[in-house]
Image (cartoon, rainbow, N blue to C red; front, side, top):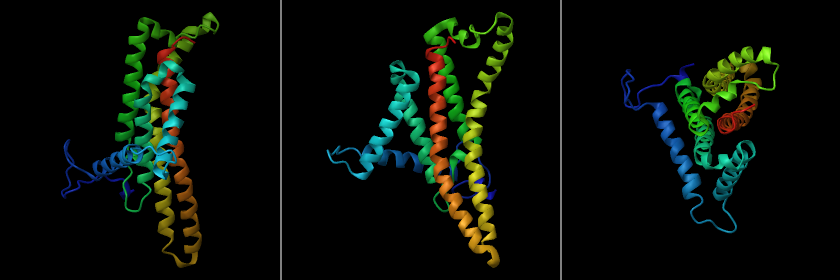
Length: 235
């Protein structure tokens, strides 16, 4: 598990509030990758797009369609925020697959901040847009009257658990995949099973590429679902 240790970048052992760490470095690299892809890669906007322009346009169209389908036209004004979340997570996940890299999204401290940002934004937006009507999210009017108070309690609990599940799902999947690869790599030193170990590493690496995208997608689409609840809270 040493690959997940947050270390000061310029020596020492203490990590303070303003210490530049390996996590800081790779989050900065992630931001630079996003700028390179979406700003530098699309600045010429050719009719026949380059590879980078194609990837940027596909990412833009993919998230735009997701936001529109889940939240409706009303949710499109929040597209820049959701696009930023997706690009940061997917680029951090992919960058973490590079040899000797650090994966910021394997840490609950990073994913927790992202999830709490979504939770607070959606909650504040829900009350700003709907006032006390936002509480209708917790009142299942289609259920029998006797069950509604019980369901309301369940809905409230599930609502406040959202940032926990939202963050742990992403961090847990990224940490688990990297840890399994490291375990298989440890067996590669044993000559008798080295070929099987290398084959397992290759398969897990391919799976991690898929998981890196899927987890970014899941985090983003859940954000859209939560946003929809804030815009249209009534069951």
